[in-house]
Amino acid sequence: MDRVIIRGSGRANEIGYHVSPSKNTGDILQKGLKDPAYIWKSKGNAEWFRRLHEDPDNNEYPEDMTIWIVDITGLNMEADEETKDMSYWSSAFREGEFGEGYIYRGRIPPERLVDRY
Image: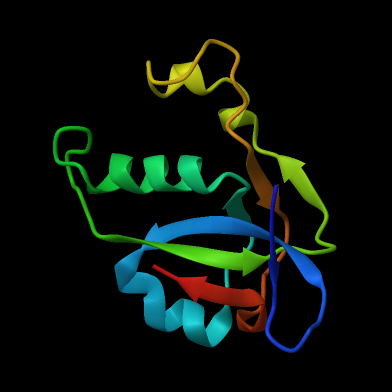
């Protein structure tokens, strides 16, 4: 789990990473993340997921993706069943390896978006 000090908060907040097509940037900045919001707690796995979607060798319709850093402090997250065994997705993962993917059942407001890259 990653933590970051949010400017002005004076406390360490729990952060997660949301991966979305870059074409959605304007909508996300205005409205936040839609329900359900898929969040990776591992930066490395979020970056792997972005590469999966951007790589024409792995994706018939590759597209530019943005990783959003999201303040998830206090949100009730549930494990994403599709990330419970990441070896299903790629041989880069060990059998049974949990990918730290979570789902938040609700909209995440833009005020919780810390940064993007």
